[in-house]
Image (cartoon, rainbow, N blue to C red):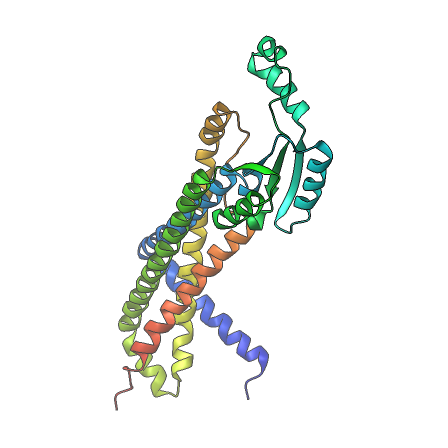
Length: 308
């Protein structure tokens, strides 16, 4: 039985041997890593675009208000009771009551019709409930359900909510997410093909060495080990280069994006990949490299047998 120290030493030897082979052919290694990096950087860059688009538009729950106009004969006390009833709903985050007197005062101040409003004998404006839904209830379907609920109240004259822009924005973000998943899946297959083909060529170039190793008792697992580490290194180094590309692109675009946001009165700033996203990129690259090497090795090593 092999001791743990011997087992670890063999794996370290295979890893160092794979690293040495990559360093002996810097041009070919660099080209392979560059292609892998481009394949990994594209979905990572799309992820940055999607996440920043969501951040730039803000939380939909903070941008949607359901405005409930009460009937003119509803008293302020009854309006406050309706406010409490609306606030008890689990899909409602906040309910603000705008009394008719306050609404008239704000309209007089900002509309420019102050003198004309003085001629009115009674306040024509009703009490208004401004309702903000919770984040999990901010999708158009649940907003429509909320609208129908309040419209059914006998004290309500009109319920107004503009969800058309929310539907458009949600559709655009969903399209970007699906495009990201599609592009990521296709490019992941591309990384597998790149690594697999590279390892296949490496196996063919070392065919005589593999035959000798098997002749003296080397198993397929033993022969396969350095190729797996080689694929893992390809994927990991490609992931590191892809991370550097995305970070550099984010840094180059940060100032123009901030300047554009300031022209619209926003303090938005571009965010790059976080630690978790960077770890996923590196781990995904390493895993794809290992898997591509394993597929190529399993398929090609079984065909190589020592000749008598």
